[in-house]
Length: 440
Ligand code: SAH
Ligand code: SF4
Ligand code: F3S
Image 1: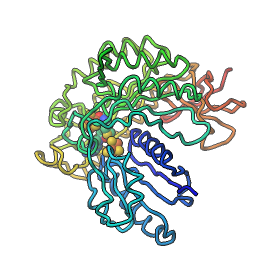
Image 2: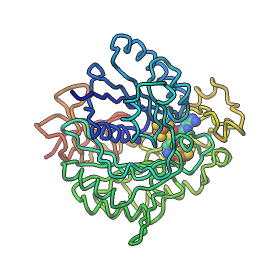
Image 3: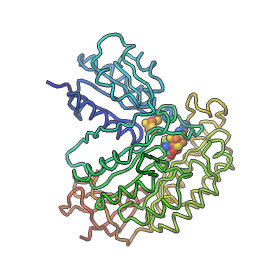
Image 4: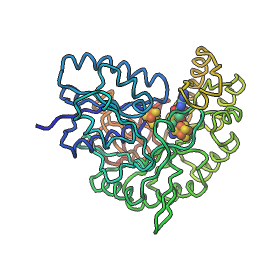
C-alpha cells in the first residue's frame, strides 16, 4: 500500500502553492496525499520565517509532533519552506524532525523520506537559481476547487532591509510563459473560475527566449485572453513596477480583477529609505492617483508595519496620514520583528520599544477599521458581481463569495452553486464584510 503524506502549510500564498507542488511530487513518487493528520505516514510542515512569531508557531507545533510520533511510531516528519532554509541544522536537532528541505529542494523530498540512516543526510537546502518547478502540475486538494494559485516568479532580488525572504527563497527567477499559459489552460479546463498569479514581486516578471520577450503586462494579457471566463488576480505587486501600461491593461480586460495589493510599508520617506524600498511617498501616491483615475472602482490593499528602526512618532504619523489619503479597502498590519542576518539586523538598531510597537500597531488597526467601514458603506446600494466560494461560517443558510475588489460578501442561499457568478445588491456592511441580496 502506498504511504500517505499529510502537508500542513504556514505563511504566504506562495507556500500554499508550493505545498501543492510538493503533493504532486510525492504523488508521482507513489505517495498518496491526505488531508487528515491521523492518516499520515509522512507529515510535512511548510514553514514561514517572515516574523519571529511565525517561527515560534512552528516550534510549538514541533513539540506537539514529538508527542504525536511517540503514539504513532511509524510516522516521519519533514520540515520544508523558509524556516527550513534559515535554520535547517537547528530544526534537525529537534527530536520530532526526520528531514529538512529548503524551497528549491522539493524534488529531493521523496529521496529524503526514504533515507533511513544518519540524520545529517536528511537535509537539502541548496538554493537553485534554475528551479521553477517547471513541468510539475500542482496537486489540487478538494473536488470542488474553484480558485488556484499559479506561481510565475520565485525568489526576490529586492533586499528590503528588514526582510528575510531574499535569504530563504534565493534570487528571483521567472517561469517560462509557455509553462504558465499551459498551467492556466489546465485549470480553466478543470473548471476553475479564478486564478492568482503569484510572485514576491509579481510585476517584475520577465522571460525571454528566441521568439519573444515577455514582461508582466504582456503575460497578464496573454493569461486574460486564454481564459476569458476566469477571474485573473495577481500578487504581490511592488510599487516600483506598477507601470502605466500595467494599470491600463488591468482597466482594459474585464476578467482581470480590479484589485491591486500594493504594499507601502511606511508613509515616511526617511523610513522607506532605511527599508530600502526604492520609492518615495510622493512616487507611491502618484501611482495610487494614476490607478484611481484609470480604474475608478479599483480595490486597493496594502501591507504596513510600524516600529521599524528609527521610526519616530512623527514618522509614524506620516504612515497614518498616507492611509487617510489612499483609503485602502483593507490592509495587513504588523509590528517590526528583527530578522537575523538581514541588513537591518546588521546595520540598524531596533530602537522602538515593544510597548511602543504594540501601541502603534493598535493605532494602525483602529484607523484601518474606520477606513474599511467607510469604504464598505460606500458600497451600500450597489450591485456587485460575486464569485460564490462556499457556505458562510456563521450559518448554512448563507453563502459567501468575493467581489472583483476582493471584498467578502455574505448573502442568503438560493441553491446557488459554488463557483457561479451572482449579482448581489449590497444592503448592509461591517468593516470586514458586505451583506446583500442576490438578484439573479
Ligand atoms: N513580497 C511581498 C511580501 C513579503 S512578506 C512584498 O514585498 O510585499 C509580507 C509582508 O510582511 C511584507 O509586505 C511586510 O509588510 C511584512 N514583513 C516583512 N518582513 C517583516 C519584518 N521583519 N517585520 C515585520 N513585518 C515584516
Ligand atoms: Fe521581502 Fe521586499 Fe522582496 Fe517583498 S520585495 S519579499 S518585502 S525583500
Ligand atoms: Fe513566509 Fe517565506 Fe512566504 S518567509 S511569507 S513563507 S516567502
